[in-house]
Structure formats: C-alpha cells, structure tokens
Length: 247
Image (cartoon, rainbow, N blue to C red):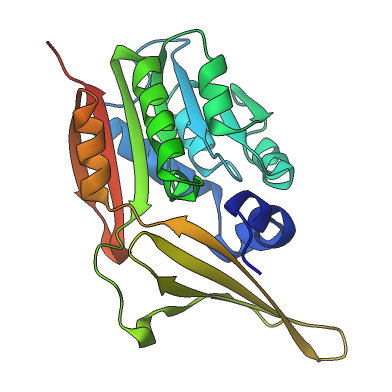
C-alpha cells in the first residue's frame, strides 16, 4: 500500500525517524555554523525564521542557535513533541499545520525560511510545490533568504544501489528501497525489530516522493526573481540558498 508522505510518517516512519537519522544536538550546531558561514545568521534581535516541515527540530534548533525567533511547522505531532524537547528553552514556537496554510497565514515578512531534508519533495504534486514556492518568495523580506536541502536524484541509481541500509542496533534494523519513475520516487521504508525472545519481525510502508532535481528547483526560484547559490555535499545532499534579487 502506498500512502501519502504525511500518512507515511504518521503510520510508520515518525516513531523511529530520530533513531534512524541518529539525531544529536551537535548536528543542529553544524547547520547553525553553516548558516553563519553563508551570512545567514540572524541580522538583529527578533529576526524571524520559519522552518517548514521541521520534524524533530534539526533545523529549528539550528536557526535558534543562529539567533532567530523560530516557528517550526509540521504535520506529525509525534515529531513536533520531539522538536519541543530538542528546542526546550529556546525562542521557538511549534505548530501542527500544513505548509501552504501556514505560509498563507503569515502576515509579517520573514528574515529566513528553511525547507530542508527533502520536505519540498514530500509535497503531493507540482501545483502544490509551485504554490509553496510562490508563498515562500512572497513572504521574504528584501534582505531575507530561503534555504532548501534535498537529495540529488538526477541520475537513477543502478538496481543494486537502490536498497540502502540506514541504521542498525542489536534489536532494530532500518533500510530503504527506492523505485524510480520519470516524475516520482517510490520510497519503501523497511523496519526489522527483534523482540525479547530473539524473534525478528519486519514492517514496510511506501510513499511517493517528487523527483525534482536541484537544478530544476534552482531554476524555479530564479524564475521567481531570486538569486540562487548551490552547494553540494558528500552523499548526494544539495543545499540551495535563494535570496530576492536586488533591483
């Protein structure tokens, strides 16, 4: 059964997502340092950041460490609860809401919008992507910026490379299988768990991810009047920084 990305997290992935990604607070510090390296730290006290699809708070915490007052938005209450723990004591507000609804509700211009960890690819269709991009650019201050991170699936991996082990412990193993079409990637998350008697069981669930390449996303942002820079990291991760063009 193939569910939507939101249902996939709700019914399968959210409960072990933090374990699978080995989240630690220092991971947020790494991205906070990256923001500062690119002159994306808070320009003044009270500067505002919006984290779209904040999950367990990796980037929410990073933005707070970079000096922002942060609003983190996600549809998984389980992950929002984890984000609350990971950002305790910081200038952070968390909200259960859909991305475009939250952007439409924003009345003040934003210094920073982050939409990371493939969140833009989890949207249901290209029309929704275009709506979200329009709203992000419209909500930015002239001096603001938007940050996106996503995996580069421009080239389809060979069949043997589409099964990817992700994490393992004595009682749990997580892996993912990727199946490609021209426009989507079907992601099947597989979890194997061992009970107290030593018996293993497995569960698997699938959802579609949009196959939008970093180059296409950069072009879409440029079309909306942004100057875009791109940075590639090991493992296929790509970061895009979009700033409103100076007229």
